[in-house]
Amino acid sequence: MLALRSLTFLLLQILITPVFALLALLTFPFSRLTRYRFISQWAKLMLPLLRLVCGIRHEVRGFENIPQEPCIVLCKHQSAWETLALQEIFPPQVWVLKRELLWLPFFGWALALTSPIAIKRSDGKGAIKQLLKQGKERLAQGFCVVIFPEGTRVPFGTRGKYKIGGALLAASSGVPVVPVAHNAGRLWGRNAFSKHPGLITMSIGRPIATRGRKAEEINAEVEAWIENEIQQLPH
Image (cartoon, rainbow, N blue to C red; front, side, top):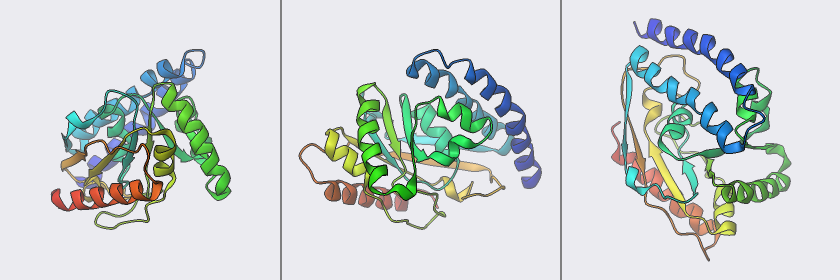
């Protein structure tokens, strides 16, 4: 049954995504915010589908910690699940991601219309300059900036190296950072086909003040909170 339910969800994604992406292309003439609001409906459709087909539910702790103003969201990255859930839980957002994702047929085309900060990872200092410049622009436009500080998905129960890009943007802009922990990887693992039924818990921390602080200090505080909070979530 697990394999059948996981396969059914995959087939539904394959059927729905191209149609939705083609509709998303029609939003090109509209504002960034209007485009995002339409395109993010895909993620909001996938979550109830995931619950119905695969039995994966979720709860959110600390919802009251989401600021009214644009912020920088630094989130644990274990699964594809959080890329869906963040769009339902947080206000309009842009993501920092590798530019190769924009080349994917259908999915990448729609993703490009959400105004992401698409960096070339091998560019080093150039990628950081792009992140700081475009990150400040997106914040000024009213978007939250979502960054996965570990850079890639890590298996549940492990810790990747927390890269400093998000903290540099926070220190440079003075915008608060919201740390996010969750345990999605135990039900839907990194690059896993199988999606196990159960409850995912996402925990949202209190905003971390960044004005006048060093990036290294901010990064260390974010990492400590996320990794400690994950230990408090169901395993």
